[in-house]
Length: 102
Image (cartoon, rainbow, N blue to C red; front, side):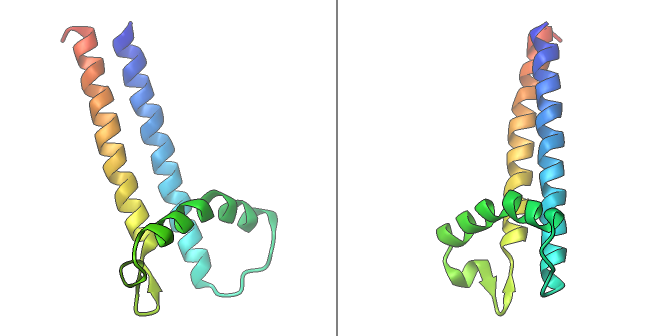
C-alpha cells in the first residue's frame, strides 16, 4: 500500500517540476521579445517565476547569474530543478520499491 503512495507521489512531483521547467522556458523566451504587452497570461508567467528569479539573483553574485548582457539564471534554475527532481523522485521511487518488498 505505502509503495503505491510513494510511487504516485514521486510521479506527481516529477510532473510538477517538469511543468515548472516548461514555464521557466516560456518566460525566458518571452523575455527575449523585449517589450511584451501586459496581459493576464504574461502576468501569470511573471507571478510564477519572479520569486525564483529574484532568489537566484539575490543568492548568486551578479557575474555568475549574468554573463555579459545575458541572464543565465533560467539555466541555473532549470539545472537546480532537474537535480531536485532526480534526487526527490529517486528517493521516493526507491522507498516505494522497498515498501512493496521487491
